[in-house]
Picture 1: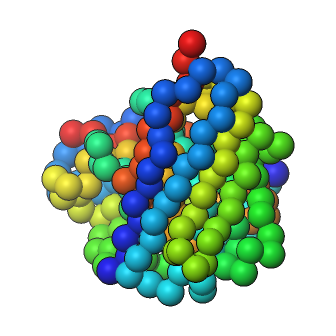
Picture 2: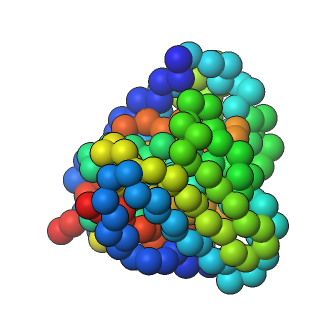
Length: 106
Length: 116
């Protein structure tokens, strides 16, 4: 089963800047990779699935790329509401698993 | 709109049992697969279990296999998680999650605390 490793653990950026988050899989998950955003005290929200498809209602400043073992979530211009924790998750075979998360802070 | 409301959480002693429920509305329940995902206090997300839309398959994380059972009642639009042999490391907020695509819609969670 694939293990996901996210980097960095914490990313310090300023509003308006670009943020690039990484997720590496221990074995190929093809394009079966999703990204979630979690704000404090809230449930996670699906951002991206199938590595690069934005979920319904997600702004186009969020984009996903990659396949196999290397994936990236890019936020093109950070808004105040984007300061949150981001998790990747694979759905290539059972059991599914999540990465440990990247906190994006100001 | 999709609504998922979890219940059944509480404080339980190690070795005890608890049954979580999730009441769903706003979509066709019988067409959807569901997950349980948990989050220990201050920690990341852990996928726990999945049941297919027709109930034909169930999948579990290794950490809960043999102790937890996921089930569904399409007549009541409810999803359950029967938990037994609870351990302190099962302490977490448990989320009910609707599939398609992946973990698309989340409830607000119900807190399970395992402590003596």
